[in-house]
Image (cartoon, rainbow, N blue to C red; front, side, top):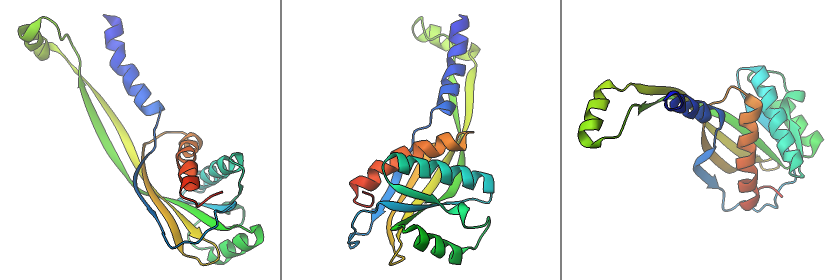
Length: 193
């Protein structure tokens, strides 16, 4: 009986602990001639410098683990809005062929309600149990991100994707999952080598 009460709690913890990234929209410029890029400047748009740094470091590490050159923008660009000139300098000095930018579009709070209690004894057993049961309520946030890739030479948008994932406390883990979902797509679409 005690195990039955723990089951909804474990399910809600599992929901928050393991986030899967799902792609909700995707676009690629069909006229982009390529070739696939082997070096990337990574930009994370965030009002929090700490979140930006963790995002850029983690995504850059994932790109490097995939055999690409990656440069986090915060090393050259100060926190806050601006820094376009320094970004241009970083792109030129690094030799990056594309700039990958991720920004948050929205956070939506979701609520799941899971009834608990006995579901045995036919309809009348269920009916009596439905009055006595309690519901397990789980609240979580779904984060929607936009990731775009820009050609460094032409400054044109060549690829864009919108993703959704269950929010996590750990920025590095969430970024790692995002990178692991997007890097194969970027390769399949001919954006990255």
